[in-house]
Amino acid sequence: MPPPLADALAYLDAHVNFETAPVRRSMPTLDRIAAVCTWLGDPQRAYPVVHLTGTNGKGSTARMISSMLAAHGLSVGTYTSPHLESGRASPSTTRRSPMPCSGSNRSRSTSRCG
Image (cartoon, rainbow, N blue to C red):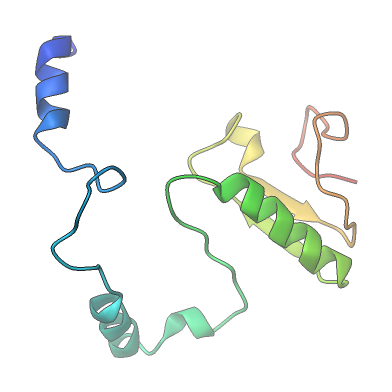
């Protein structure tokens, strides 16, 4: 049974929302992550990849980047998690087509465009 709404709101209010906080004590840096990557031998440099993170705009940004790379003749694969529409919507590929997927081009059985 889920907690009552008041308990859930109290839990959320006890945490800082960095999107609306007026001032931070210090700006976050990637120094610790960079040190771990160096220690692991910089595995992120082993293959060409664009990794998008954040709160808003990842889907549209991924579509724009995929379209630009495909327009330059590259094969592009996109994986999103969590699933945007259904379990079949996560992996997709662009086969030398600079046109982004739209609702009318998308097949119901696959998320590939073409």
